[in-house]
Every structure is written in C-alpha cells, then in structure tokens.
Amino acid sequence: MINKNRMFRSSMMAAGVALLALVAACGSTAGETSTGGTTSESKPEITDPAVQAAALRTVDPCALLNNTTLGELGTVDTESLSDTDWTDCSVDVRDASGGTVELVLRIGDQLIMSEDPA
Image (cartoon, rainbow, N blue to C red; front, side):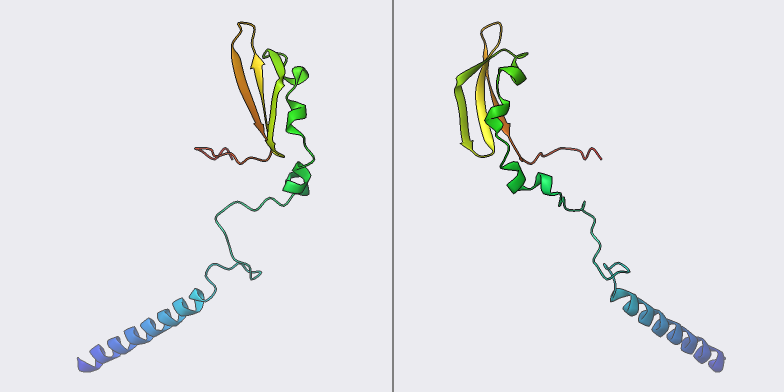
C-alpha cells in the first residue's frame, strides 16, 4: 500500500512539474504574434496621407460655407463668416421664416460615438 501511494504521488509530482514548465514556456510569448509583433484589441491606426493634418490644411472650411452649398437651408450671411484657425469656420444662415442658425464646420475633428458602427 505504501508503494502504490508513493508511486501515485511521484507521478502526480512529475505531471505537476511538466504542467508548470509548459505554462512558464507559454507565458514568455503571451501577447505576441508569430511574426514577433504584439497583438492589439484596438483598431489599426489610420496612416493614409490624405487624412493627415498636413493634407487637411489645404482644405478651406470657409470656402465650403456659401450659398451654393447651403442654399437649401436659407440665405448665408457672408458678413458673419468667421474662421478661428485653419480647421474651423462658422457662418450664420437665415431661413425663410427669418430665423437664424449658426453653422460651424470643423475639418479633421474627431467624432465620439456611443456605439461603434463597424
């Protein structure tokens, strides 16, 4: 009886050591891909040069706020055009009932959404 118990404990000890070695070996590559890079749960970074800040600086937001683009909303008050920096422009638009609304256009602004549309 003592030999069977000792043999069982020895085999359990060997299995435990083998399992520990296996877990330790797997832990050294956790979070890496097969190519050596790390994995990420986030979406990839956008690197398209067309949407970088330098390319967006060539867009004039005030040029987009005119009677041609906003004519269906009402009459644009061109005297109210105001640009705060190279990304923002605002303008007042008077509708048919005489009400005025201020529109602000921001180029390259980040959107915060409650749900991911993808």
